[in-house]
Amino acid sequence: MAESAVESVKLAANNVTKRLQKELRTLMMSGSHGISAFPEGDNMFRWIGTIEGASGTVYENLAYKLSLTFPATYPIEAVKVKFETPCYHPNVDSHGNICLDILKEKWSALYDVRTVLLSIQSLLGEPNIDSPLNAQAADLWKDQTLYKKVLLEKYNKEVRKSDDSTQQLHKLS
Image (tube, rainbow, N blue to C red):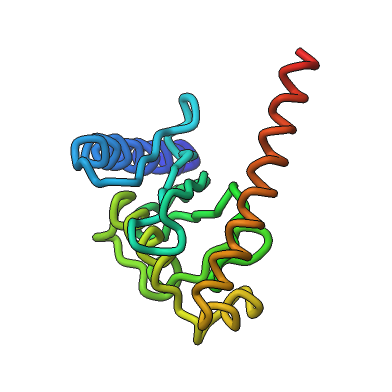
């Protein structure tokens, strides 16, 4: 009996891997502007993604790194997505967690990585200020000029800090 349970788990993981390989091909062929994602090494269940802010938004010309973690029950259960680059946004907390309905209660097995990344990219320019994870950013959103000033200050400070950390690591090696 234990062997058949192990076989079921292996089969399920194999099916998820096949789905993720298909999603990777679809994403690469889509030509969707400003989004990308690739598996982290050989692990198909952990991906690194990037999102660029859409033109015409306060996030234009800013790029963010994301981590995507796929559960063994994907696509029945939603992918877990977090900002790795600090993101000042009404719907993103200081740990990079994202408040987006399609990643929670509105998840559907019909969604794929491309849909998720495009939704997050869209959320950057069109936050849900009625459901904020960052109340200060939500309050500031009304004044786009001031919001952009604070956003750029925080982004430049955080990106410079992470660039400095990377340079320090290179000096140590």
